[in-house]
Length: 446
Image 1 (spheres, rainbow, N blue to C red):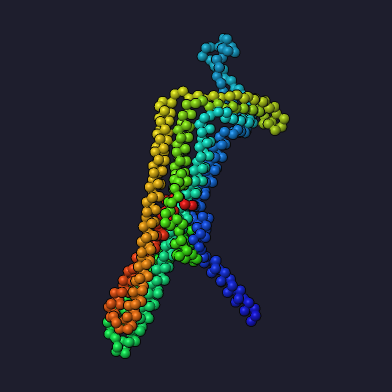
Image 2: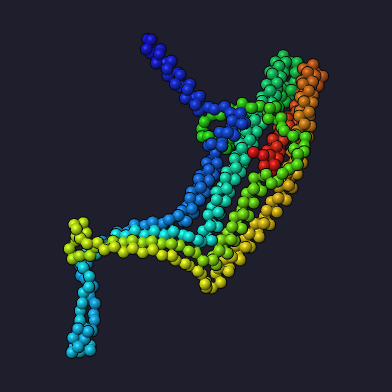
């Protein structure tokens, strides 16, 4: 029995541990940190950065010494035959007579090593610099992805919190209405209330329960969205540890742009400036297509020739060694180089225009999102105050109904008003969170 009890305890502990592993609790900050490691888009962006780093090494390798080793083994089953005029050996031979000659040996083996070193190539120098700038672009893209991932997680977190808040309010309202219905039903059964009062409360409770069912669905959807955004399996369970009051404490809530907005620090501006730099380097690369390139080369070979295969048994090897310089100077290529250079210049000019466009767009967007945030904050405060007033009116109406001062129809009207204002409050709360998130994006907040 002791062994069975021990096994049962161990099984329970194992089960609890498995359940705990499937359920994780997150604050907003913890959810964002988790997402920076597990979000699918962030993972791929990190891989893009690794590719960019490898691209730098690839480009650098072009300017490093290139060394090749080559070995060749040849066995002539039939030596090639050459025809020469027979008169070369016999002056009396007819003019149209040829002698058949075979030159060479049956076995011809060669081992060699060759090396080249690029000494100067303008296109290579520009390409090397461009690859490093491209790596910088990939790093900036990682930073942009991190900002977007954190804001997407924040929006999903806000949505889940608002859905839970909506459910909480509806559950309280449903409980109050259920208690009122039970009390009215008892009074009706005693003959002291009309059946219409009972029906009216049933109808109100049904509407609240329908809204509650929808709220439960919204919670499931929003939590699944949050799990997707942070890169967690949606079959796992997740709990939210932050509350709405904590997250409603915003920085600079009265005037988020009270400090001058520096568009140059915005990640979108940095990306477009890097793109401009890349377009300028591309133009320079095309211009260097008119410049010469210089390379050095070295070659050494050992050749073995014999009618018997004696490459590894004391046969003779004959060396051949040379080095030199090569100069390549493009002269004519039709209009190809001129056209490509012109296109690269136009792309650079376009990039300059895009920089100016993004600069103005970021400043405009920051002002717009600030206005939307301030407006959303005002609407939220008004709706929150309106919800408190509506709740107070609803409580007073319930009291008056219990005292027989008002009818069930009047009570239903008050409850419907409360539910409508509650829906507006929930929408205003969600709009405020979205406005905050959009403002963070516009400011480039990391």
